[in-house]
Length: 293
Image (cartoon, rainbow, N blue to C red; front, side):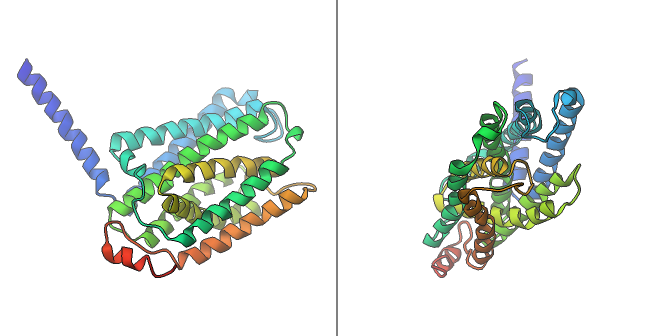
C-alpha cells in the first residue's frame, strides 16, 4: 500500500511539474490563450448571472442602482479575479508575477505615474457623488478593485511574465501585452455594437496598457499598476455616468481638466513606445536601457 501511495504521489508531482514547466517556458500564444480563456469564462459568468438574476436589474444602466453595480460589475469581475489568481497559483507563475524589479527602469518612466494619477485625483475631487443612488459609489469603487486585480493579473501579470519567459525584449513585451489588453475591451461592444466611444476605447486602452506597463516597471511591482487601474476605472465610470460612455451634460472645471488625461495618456503612450528598451537577464539590454534617459 505504501508503495502504491508513493507511486501515486510521485505521478501527481510529475504532472504538476510538467504543467508548471509548460507555463514557465512562456510564449506569446500562451499569453493570448490565457486572455482568451479568461474572457470566455468572464463573459459566460456574466451571461449566467443575467439568466439567474436579470429580473432584479433596474433600468438606466450599470450605475443606476446598487443592485445593478453588484450584478453587472462586482459579481462577474470578482469571479474573474478569483479565476486568474487560481490559474497563476496552479501554473506556478504567481511568484514571478509579484516579483520585484524584474527589469531595470529609467527616470523618465515616472512620467507614466503622473500621467495616470492626475485624472484620478481630479475626478475624486470633482465627481458629483450626490447624483448617484444610495450604495452606487462605494460599490463602484469596490468593483474597481476587482477590475484592477483581474485585468492587471491577466495582462501585466500573466501576459508580461509569459512573454518575458519566452525571451522577448521589453518593447515587444509592452506592445503585445497592451494589444491583448486592448482586444479584451472589444467585449464592451457586446449588446451596444461598436459605437464611436467603444471604437476610441480600443486605441486608448492599448496606450493606457503601455502606461500601466511603465507604472509596473518603474515602481518595481505589479501592485502599483493594480492600484492605479483600480482607481482609474471607477472614477471614470462615476465621472461619465457609465462604462465606455461619453459624459452627458455640463461638467465642472475639475472634470473637464481630468478629461484631458485620456489624450495625455495616449500621447505619452505613443512617445514611450520609442523609448522602451531592455530584456530580462540581458546585460546588453540593460546597457541599452541607459540610452533614452
